[in-house]
Each structure stands twice: as C-alpha cells, then as structure tokens.
Length: 112
Length: 120
Image (cartoon, rainbow over all chains, first blue to last red):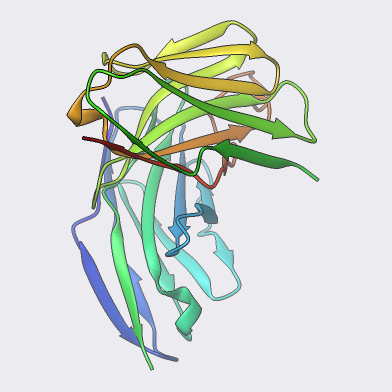
C-alpha cells in the first residue's frame, strides 16, 4: 500500500513570513494525484492545493505553492506571507487508481 | 450549491452498544461517498467508499459497516461498539471519476463537519 509521510508533527511561523511543510510518499504508480488539505480548529477539511503527477509545473494557489519532486517522491507546501488564519492542521494526501492515503498531519502555529 | 451534512455532531456511547452515523449530500447526483476515521492526533484513515447505491467497498477490516440505501445517503454502522472505535468520523463526497472512469483519481473531496464519537 502507498504511504504518505509528514515528518513534521508541528511547525510554527511568524505572521507575514514563509513556511514550508514537508511531505514524502511511496508509490510504484506513475500516474497519481497529490493534495494538501487544511483542517482548522473547526475540524472542517478544506482543499488547499492539488498536483497532477504528470504535470511538471508546480501548482500554485495565491499564497500557497508546492514543490513537487517526482523522482524524489516529495511534495512540500510553501505558505507565503503567513496569516493568523493559516493556523491549522495540514494533511498531505495521495490518490491513484486504487488508493487514497493521508499523512498524519502537521500542526501549523502562526505567531502574531 | 452542494452541501454535505453529518449527524449527530457528537455522540457518547457505551461499549457494546450499536452505532448509526448518517451522512447526506445535497445539490449533486451520483456522488462518490467516503467514510473516514481520524484518531486523536492522527491523520485520516479511509474506512469505506461507495460509487453507487448498494455498492460499498471496505478498506480495512473492522467492527464497522457501511450502507448506501439512497443515492445521496451514506450510513456508518456498528452492531457492538468497541473502545477502539472512538474517534472523529468524517464523511466526504466527490464527483464522478475523471476520463478513464476511476472514482478516486484526482477529484477533490468535500468533507462534512464530522461526528465526534466517544465510546466509554
């Protein structure tokens, strides 16, 4: 089974600064999708960004961008100009034809 | 617009009692439906998914079962709860699979508000 690893249980960032959350995954598939979801204290899961494995260009969504390294099976999330509302649990997720896996999450704290 | 509902929001049940959690989706047809469990301080574990009425696939062997009696209704059940069943249960839906038809690939999943289950 495919695995998703988030090696940083907790991260903190100063407001307006940049932070990068790490994610690695293990798969033998060549075609798959990767996601970052955000879970604020309300526990509502919200999609932040999505990356198709066949695309070389890194996905971006406003202040959120990813660094997708297919050969290294790495998918990090960069949050620029961090805001207090970015404080949440962030989950990396993997999806292919037969599988959907989430990492254990990284708790991000934003300091004012 | 599409919405997803879960109830109850919070549930405390004794060991050995039955369980029924309900999830309904509005504003879409033929959704793919999912049940996840999130243990305290941990990520999401996919429990069941359904691509249509009466079609249930189980991801992990466990004390739980799922049913889809209607197109937009997904129910998570147990005949006898265990202490280990405690957790946060999330229901999610997604649209039909991308070209190629696979239900999991690439589609954003929209999550419900969740049910916090405590088994005592």
